[in-house]
Every structure is written in structure tokens, then in C-alpha cells.
Length: 208
Image (tube, rainbow, N blue to C red; front, side, top):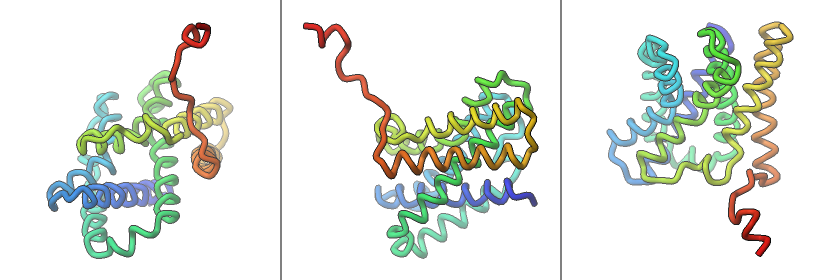
């Protein structure tokens, strides 16, 4: 069992907990909590595999993801009052998770012979679209479309992976710089409340 796989399972666990907490706060029943936790944790990877026509789909080919999600739901049910205040810890696991999912998505895109641009998009989809599907299913405007520099951090991480791969750095260096770039970009964005610009008025309206 290599380090990336361990981090992947850890990220899945953290994403599943965040999905379970979200659904619990929405007063979903147990089935609803499990579905939202599942979608949050593996929805991005599942969508990536569908778009790439990659089989078996991530969680179908490895049921450890399913068991991890179920354990995360049980863990949340038992310790919800203890987990909720640990926002900084959850943020750390969440950030590591999106870094790992970005890395796996881009790497898989390259292994399927995709153009680097498409592979980077696959990395971003792997990381953030579980959250998008969660928000859509719970009738929310997806968070990444409103304020957080989340998807952008994944795109930057994917670009870093491609550059390091292009220059034929060792695999361990490629993994390290990709993870660090995603973690740094997202952490800095959150710390300094950085956001992408919003389109409020067009150029011509300001000239009136």
C-alpha cells in the first residue's frame, strides 16, 4: 500500500465526514446522509471516470472506498459533537484530500493519453465535483461558484504536475510539488480571504 493510496483513502474519509455533517445539518435521514457522504467523497472521481470512459469506475473497482465512506458516516453519527468544532483539522484533511484527488486525476488523464489541458481538467473534476454534486442534490448554489478559491487551486496543482512531468522529474518530486502547490494556494487564499473577481457591471456600463 503506497503513500498516495493511503492519502487517497484519508481524503475520502475526510470528504465523507464533511458530506455527512452537511446532510445531518440539513436534517436528512440516515439514507440521505449516506448518499450525500458518498457523493461528496467519490462523486468527483466517478464523474472523471465516466468522462474518460475509464472502467471499472473508481469505487466499483475498489470497495475500500465504500467501506471508508460507511465508516466515516458511523464515525460522524457517534462523534458529531466532537467533530464539528475541529474546523481547522477538517480543513487540513480537506485540503490534503483535494491535492491528492488532483494528483490522481491528472495522473490518470495522462495514463489514458489525454491532452495535458484535458488531464488537468480531469484533476480538477476529481477534486471539486463531489462537492458540486452535494450542493446540487441539497439545493444549494455550489460553493466553488461563489467565493472560495478551490477549483483554481486544483488547476494550479494540475499545471504544476504537468510541468514537473514534462521535465521528467522523479515521480516522488512530481507528487510532492503538486500536493504542496494545492495546499499552499488554498491555504493562502483562505487565510487572506482571496476571491476570484465577480462580473458585476460590463465595461460599457461604466462609461455611461
